[in-house]
Length: 381
Image (cartoon, rainbow, N blue to C red):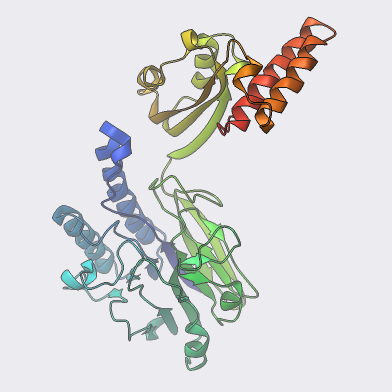
């Protein structure tokens, strides 16, 4: 059985400028995550570690980051474990690529980097294995990083065939055509035992046909978009047997991201809102709170104050203002009758005047406020 560890999108050197004073902590967390992956590879006694792109957040990481990565790779090399690195989009194999300026293989016997566009496969005779990979030359392309493999695989005599690809599986509405497209058919037709995908930050399964294909996702919280699947925080242990491939997600970080919306209409006062946020308290949580609904000007909350009050209870908290000020007096004369908005206001005011009781009147008044806000493009719902 062939056993390997698949990681990607570590993004060493990411700035995290939006994290304020926590930015330095999260930059260190990326280095810690990489060290954990190295230790996990050794502890699990895998034969190979695959890094499927974006080891670095850019082609200009700091000297300290480069030195740290080299030290970790030597640690793996000393353990006799092979590591294969594919340039991604953030650390693409452009003219100023970090993989051209720095020699990460110096003094090692087990480190290989796809740093030559003409060299798209690497044989490992000890394991009867060939790994295929095409380095990205830029951060955007309409060419598939996987399409070439079908023909290449036919000429390989290896028992095991694995591919590495950094790009976007083509899902309508989710992947752009110039974001290094990967078609499901390319996966199914590849002839691989496993395809190690990179680029999306959530660990998730995109196997097709008889071919296992997974995104490892980011092992530590990097960017807050494109989570998907299991989310961020994993590396994948892959075991390839005679007839089947097994993929086991391995947790690397305890941090997580949560986005939540609170409608202020549901709270009688600030204390009630605070109690709901208090229920989410977790020092490993990156929390994004969106406040929506209506607020009176005199009762408008200080979003900065909420962040300050909870900053020591979460790893990071951000409060977004999606509130609309409640109109105290809706005068139909301010809304021209020839406009849809004007017609809406007049219809609703007529219904309010005919309300059967105070409860119905209150519901209709809220509906009027919401309708005006939506028709004015405030998107509060």
